[in-house]
Amino acid sequence: MTKMASGLNDLKARFQAPPPKAATTGVLRQPEVRKRNTKARQDRVQKNLSILASDADRLVRLASEGGFSQAVLIGLALDAYEREREQG
Image (cartoon, rainbow, N blue to C red; front, side, top):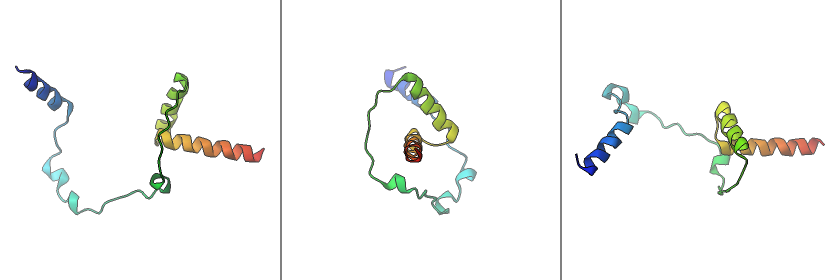
């Protein structure tokens, strides 16, 4: 087997088979669902931070438990911190 054929077989093994035709019929005629999150529309910046591994683990776990991204969790944490400071 050539190197290219081996690589192609590796790719095929990684991807699932497409869904059956019955499961996709009419999908393109359905209305598109879009989230209207105003924060998602705001300008974004990349922050490269070095944090403790234990904090990184907590960030992943808490975001997963909450069902949102790590970026959203950081925003929520900032909101909570500001509220706490305002309350004294």
